[in-house]
Length: 112
Figure 1: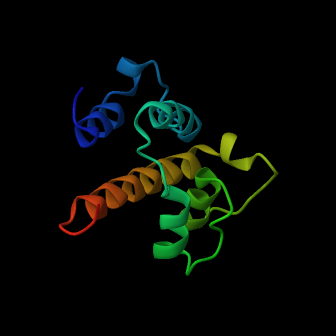
Figure 2 (figure 1 turned 120 degrees about the vertical axis):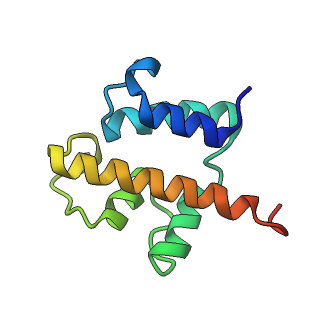
């Protein structure tokens, strides 16, 4: 199995290779599946809430927290699944920034 950082890079750079359309929604679904096998997203919601949202929202699912960090205003209850193109690009960039940040923090010495 390739290292998670390398998988993330490949998925981000070549979404069609992974049968993805490059949308935030597709990345959410894909990485939810990856998480089922690798647990890479364990603690992701809590980490986002703690590091980027002053502890608020740890009870929410991580896609909603990514949207909040990106500063995108909600338009409906399922708004993270149906974003305008510019919001989708912002949410996608924010997701990958947060995910790589989480992995970088986990890789620091003393973080088990």
